[in-house]
Length: 123
Image (cartoon, rainbow, N blue to C red):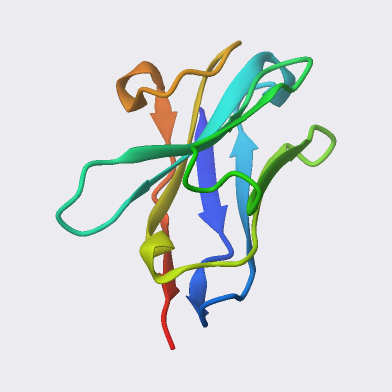
């Protein structure tokens, strides 16, 4: 069955970096868009970045443009989110999710979700 497993979260100081991984199984990664979302306490889940199927077009929320980079390794069935210049406002649980073909910003458009990984940016 479809499974998404996030890893790589942790505690980092402001200005630091983390790389999140989303390991996918049960489907062919190349045919699906993978999105990264985050949810901070008391806030709605928001889209952070997405990479589409096949061509691999990438999208970023304005709040992370220039700091985060999404990439995909089809051979490893894994999508990565490289996060640089982290800020305290990036603190949240980060989730990856999949949907067929193309990216959208809306969480309800995504079909399967991972369990999330905590990212905490604090001095």
